[in-house]
Amino acid sequence: MTVPYSRIVTEKQKGVPPAMDCERAEKLIQPYVQDKMPENEMEEFITHVRNCPDCYDELETYFIIRQAARYLDDDDRQSYNLRGLLAQDLREKERRIQRKKRRNVFFTVLILVLAVLLIVFTLHYLDFVEIPWLKGFF
Ligand SMILES: [Zn+2]
Image 1 (cartoon, protein in one colour):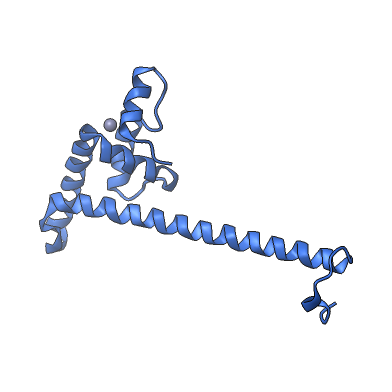
Image 2 (tube, rainbow, N blue to C red):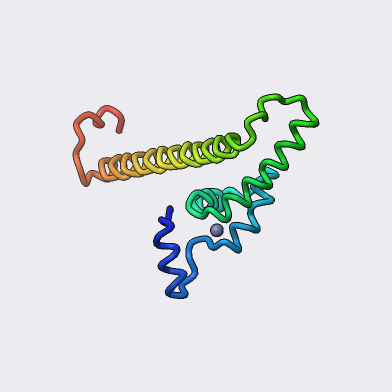
């Protein structure tokens, strides 16, 4: 579920806790940078930092420090564009969330279809409905 930042602000003004506030987002900056982010919070976190310049700056600072350390360690010259890397990293994690969501939708549909088939077979078996193309099987 994504909450537009404008709504977060309005809710804040009304004193209602928003989906994710800056305090929570700040706590998740380290786990994000260290790739230890709890998956169920990833999407809200990304939505928050996308819409909150303060948290984005802070995340970027930690991210760059982390990447810079890696850069010095690894000879990984891809890390050269450090600022661009965070944007790229956010996009990749977002894509991963989307893929997982699509997979969940697929399995939900699959289970629904199987459930419907099971019900139809059962009804046919109990002679409640007649399905001509099933006659050969039962
Ligand atoms: Zn924030």
